[in-house]
Image (cartoon, rainbow, N blue to C red; front, side, top):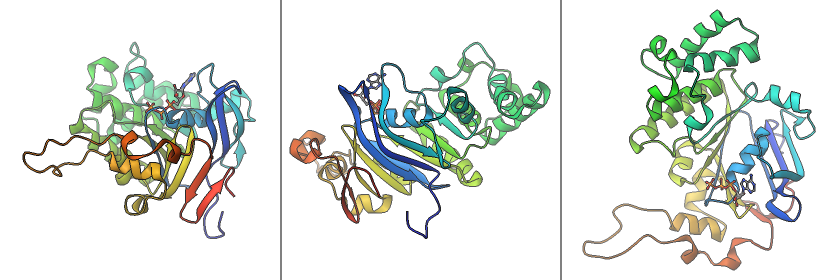
Length: 305
Ligand SMILES: Nc1ncnc2c1ncn2[C@@H]1O[C@H](COP(=O)(O)OP(=O)(O)OP(=O)(O)O)[C@@H](O)[C@H]1O
């Protein structure tokens, strides 16, 4: 990294995942996230965004495993850690918000208790103090009537409120890195912006870095300083977010931008339809053969310097 930049908080190098070596899924992905930075991973469904986040979190599901590469978090080799150490890191220094809060929340436990658990497990607080902190945490994610809501079960809240609860749980221990995997995709469009804005405000206030996984370029544009574009298990381009819209370098990125639904472009009476990605980016241009990352300084093959 340059002398003028702080050390990255997360450094992923040549990460390979697969079902054994014979069925590769990630083909050597490398990127850094700086402290306090929001970094977006964007790409089509199945390109490998979620599994990248899960690998950092140590939550890959069998039969998928890491087959090569390294992940360093705050300078420590995460893949070399013992399971106990890794669990300690999770929820404390690295936290995650998933797409569908109902799958992450326990339906049988009140939300106040689920938040309080974080303070008990990671901060060693007693339950009365942890419960009071849980109400404060609900207040911080702008859940109305937090005392009352703390006694509610997940199914008694709306989707937007549940995602706010997930954000409260994730940020309870003031992690240095939040991994947010399509955090608003399952929500009504009307509440998506509010939840994203809340997440961004809280992370900015605490200096929390964010790895934001999204297929939505609009979300990435609003939230991220830098973006990595993934295609079929490879990071094919990395740029400052503002440049990716004005000067996309990789044909796949140009295809993603061209395939975006845009309002108001169709003339009255014109039949028109949305462009599909495969129509605008040829197979040979998708970097299937060459694992080349394009950056504003030119292409780099294999491990990033
Ligand atoms: N546990 C698993 N075992 C085997 N293959 C898996 C497993 N989890 C994910 N995959 C495969 O890994 C590839 C990447 O999946 P991933 O979920 O990361 O894609 P994505 O870019 O996040 O897309 P989406 O937005 O649809 O989730 C896909 O081909 C998927 O089928």
